[in-house]
Length: 496
Image 1 (cartoon, rainbow, N blue to C red):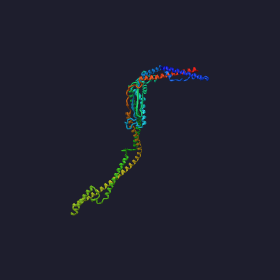
Image 2: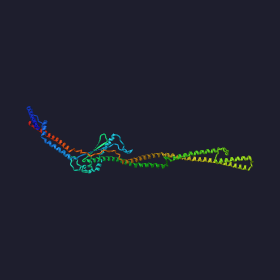
Image 3: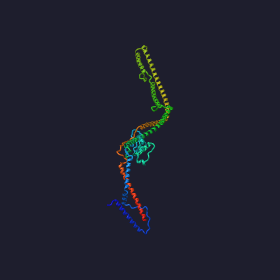
Image 4: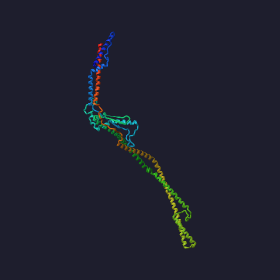
């Protein structure tokens, strides 16, 4: 039986003999002709037998490359810094909690704006403020893993950037930013945060600190915005208060200068005029009544002694009653006794006295009615003069009231604006104390069971061996091809 080496040697010998026969035939055929120049870059014909021969001749090289690759894989697996990756899911809804009816942040229901809001908060999650919070909370500026001063060996220390020798906080923030990645899940408002360190428990602590710092940063950002709004409103409040006070002082000064006084929203001059008009109407009614009474008394019948007379009063009624009784006695005695009867003379004397008293009472009543008419007329005249003065005053006050209305409208507008700003400043000040963010962690980080990188040492050894053997094969084939090319050039020179 032939071995693979024998088959390869026989195949190479046959190929060489065949090549020589071809060269001799070509030389005989081309003797009369001129010999062409031979190219120094002639590529030889390579068949599988020659490739196998090359590989078998240098199998030790392939084995050495495979061993070197395996050792490199094992060395990397042993010396490389392990990575333990943990994941945290954070729900970032675009709408905050509605705790105030008139919040400074309007609720936007457009889907595109909501996605932009979530995207902005995704960048906040990996921003420098959040990283600085995490570094300060976990004291990572003293952790050699994050400051790059652990002194351990790693392939990254050979090919990566050297750690900064300045501020440890900046170095820790830079290292932490390289260990955090955040991504929003498609068609959701959920952000998945991945964090890795060389220790699984540390990875969990860092992930929890990142989520907490993110919530605090968003809440503080909104509180800071509310604080800036409160400060702006407070600065404007002083100016608005001054303007409102000046407007009120202008109204008061104008009222003092024009003697305008109001009660119940109406000028006192207008109220006085209304009261004078009411009193004037009553006085005119009393005057008409007094005149009617006087006319009634003056138009009465001359026989005022008759009970049917229109002149009536309690005194006059009593006198009339006495007169009627005495008149009956006088008439009776006149029929019974003579005219000289003493009782008759006395009764007649009394009757004349009653007539005089009745006449005096009628005169008194007429004088009283006349005095009532004169007094009622005087009151009406006085009230007419007062009403005329009041109308003149009201006319002047009405002209002034037009200007006063303008001043009062300006005052009311400035006071309303001041009150609105004052209320809004109070609301924003209270809003600053509230955390209305609706961000929450829906999946906390848990320690991983195994490291995420590098893979197991055995896998690295196998992978390194495979890569090393591939490199060794490529190197052997390259050397074999290079030797074949040189051999071809040598033969070409011999034939030439």
